[in-house]
Length: 222
Image 1 (cartoon, helix red, strand yellow):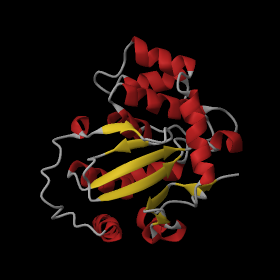
Image 2 (cartoon, one colour):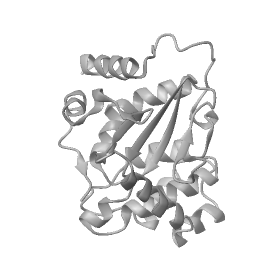
Image 3 (cartoon, helix red, strand yellow):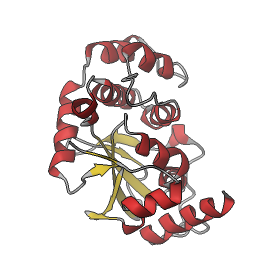
Image 4 (cartoon, one colour):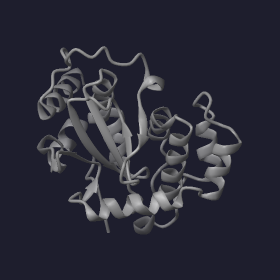
């Protein structure tokens, strides 16, 4: 397991042209709560990290996708978070929701809406981590309003009248639709997909990511 962790760290650092041991002169951030986060200029992505970061990565994820969880909890996501905290990488998250159409239900859409609502409260980073750490089985469609609010209670300062209402009313449905379209219009054919300057990172193509994480086949769009 330790060997795999080292391989993953080296793989993403090499792919991004960075070193985990020496990431420039920036001092970074003390914790997740301090990391800058904002809505992307195109209105379809959520931007996390230093505006002056040397490297920008685009990450496509579907909240319901088990392979996205593997990436976030065991693979590149953990390493990306370290690089974000150091101020070396900025990540643009595109939140897809195609698995709802493929599997039935609306959990991906509800989770994407809740993530956007968390951004409005300045809590996207923490809530994003909580949702992936407690993802329901994709076949269960477990991202209900009640579950999403329960998970939000794990993030200090997130729950409130505004956030709760946004979750229950699908306040950001327009963002959810636009983000899914951005995914469909991209070169990504599965989640998770990492792109650097519009080019998919070869280290995280289907076979190699499965090797690094021990994951099953990726979810693919219908």
